[in-house]
Image 1 (spheres, helix red, strand yellow):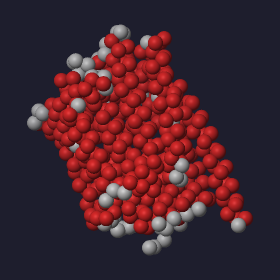
Image 2 (cartoon, helix red, strand yellow):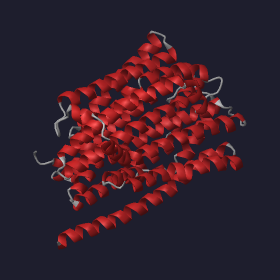
Image 3 (spheres, helix red, strand yellow):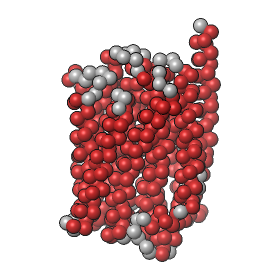
Image 4 (cartoon, helix red, strand yellow):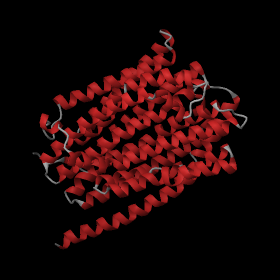
Length: 458
């Protein structure tokens, strides 16, 4: 096998090489849902936006499953390559692909069988349910393709081809952007047409990804034997992906709690239940769009961290960490300035012009994104610890923001502050989680520095 460039090329060049396609892929994935909501908002208004909002937790569940397998698998894959364990890397890649397919099909079947119950739990009201059911049912059909697309992208990047991973996701997004207005305004298919365009886009992206594994995957050779699931390999993959999975599951819990909090406390306010549901949906899509850049940088650093930690190139590990943190911090500050400076213009993109909707939307954007400038630390931290084979710390840092702080705050604060309590929970959780992530990073940096010094003495 030729020398892996992860251990030789300049770090800044590698981060750009892996992060830019990852960022584009994540932004494209965010646009999938944002474009749906924009077109639906212009066609149906707040009730249509609310329908996509209550369906969004299911999308996050799919992402959670995909990241459990793909980030865990890609981390294990990179570590194995760094340790020159090519047979193990082969099994890892094959097992991960099989797990992606099986989990996607299983999740689609479960979601379709319990569709209305899931939407009710996610906060759907009687007014929203007639729009949410047909939209989500079609989205459910595309779940296996969505999970495979997200998951395969991580392995394509780990195989050294981040540009192909980007085009894998981009192909479906372009299809979605073209056919959303065609199905909606030319064929008059309504909310079902929006869902169909999204699902067909996912099918296209997954086919592009599958082609890569059949014809272009080159780091190791995939065989039928490697596709047979091995319990030890699968457990290791899941343990390394547990941090990302836990973070996404926590996001699902937060989305459901927020939907139901806004549904309940909104009903007690001048806004009613539908306007807050629609506004939080718009906020979620915008937040994911901006956070995609920081998450993409963190994902771009992942194979560099994993390979070099496995190869004991500790200087390169520390340099990658330093550049990653600096880049995500700069991105977070810029995102904060943009959102705080232009909230009205951003909200207006979603089509609903009701004065109460605009009033509540402005308030939710200002408050919930108030600590956005420090949000870049956490994704780098979680991905870093997962990449170097320390998933427990990665999981803990992933859970601090969502589970340990945000969920208790969103349950308690509204009891005293009403609907505003749900808004202020986010910036408080952001601040404390960033402080904890910084503590673990500084501690691990010291540990790695000591490992480097020990190697130099030997």
